[in-house]
Length: 420
Length: 206
Image: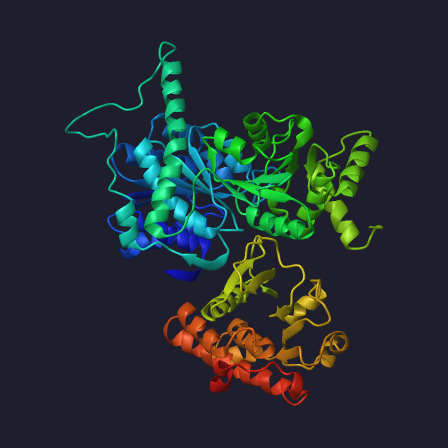
């Protein structure tokens, strides 16, 4: 039923409809509302049978999820940012063991400097862990992807991470069609584990594998991830038939037919980009956008097809590899075999910096004239940067911490104590 | 698209005000998006929340920078926050206070904004009278309905009952009605011609 509801609440209700049997999580902003709501549903009996296990850390949350999944229970957890890093060792183990855990990642940056706001640094830090990573553009898609995630995870026996922008989606209240229990039951069959720890039929899971077979076991994991590239669109098509709306899949294009310039992005910023694309189209520019829903496994062929007609590609990403540049754009470059001159990386929205339509339009106009730097930091305050660089260069001894001086510089200017 | 920015302090239900406002707009068959400014919220600290209302699905995720309407839950913020940032002269402004603007040193506002779009409302008093708690949000959302005509009082009442179950919902509905009447009356004598046309729902509830 379509309701005006908070994104986190909608995800929690949807997860409950997926009938997880064990939920184990540790609270961290901006994931907290999801876990609180699921916990309340377990306590009230609205979600039953289900055990909500309180633990002391994210490391324990993922470890308990691994144990629950290996024992044959449908397991769900959620985290963000430093919480994801704290569970990192277990994140690798969940995929290495082939356990179909579903986890919501309420995307938030990673410190330092400490910052609770949204970007995709956390998701990018786990792109090589062997988890399937799906990105939601809207809260409706976040909800729908969770239902699909359980199906994908259990069919492949691989863990799936649903990435949704922290705060921007998790804390937004909007019209969301939360799936009904009957519809979810018809779509998501009961969990049939491929491997299970059963005292009546004992096996061991998690053997030590030496050099004689490690490469082969990892190769098999690679092949199984690639199977997801066929399964994900099939599940999305099934979902569209069952629920009457399309969500998920590998990539989605918007106004790309005849487009000279195509933007590529992940997650909720696609909404603002579509508004910017419409505005540039109204001004006569041929621009479009491709949203990547499935980031891991990376849909090389689908991305190449979606960008085949573009003269230039602009990858807008909320994360970057310090010391190199774009993360997503590297994948896009490889998928499309593009030369550097036709592929731009725009790093934007770091640590919660708003990405505005105005900034995007200015950037698109520059891209259309090939006036964009190959690596651009959107809305970067070069004055702040240059003053701090000058201060560091001028310091004779112990220049001190950069973050503190940048904040002090901003505060002084805001208070009018120095010329802006 | 109609965009609203709500200022208040942590603990005053600023985010809930945006939520209720969006629920009322949704009830009116429109698309609505409510969201807080994301910060480390604490009691008493300045808090901002936003709401967008449109006939079409809302795709943008940028903050509201040029609101069509401003709601101020705590007038003491005027000395701390740039409350009027991005407001055009034709914007609606609803301030929670029982004092005249001149007494607050805010006489300039009546020159900056249109008289039929600038209004004060003693929302905290209405809330204290009806609920016993100084939470001005429900009253201000109803005041916003009266000031702008963007949402109906009936939809606000429904949203409040949905958001606050039982007697608390009813008390908030009573505070909302008091505020709706206050804003309607305070706008009426000045220039009835430019007053927002009440919808049927407004008229029935009045």
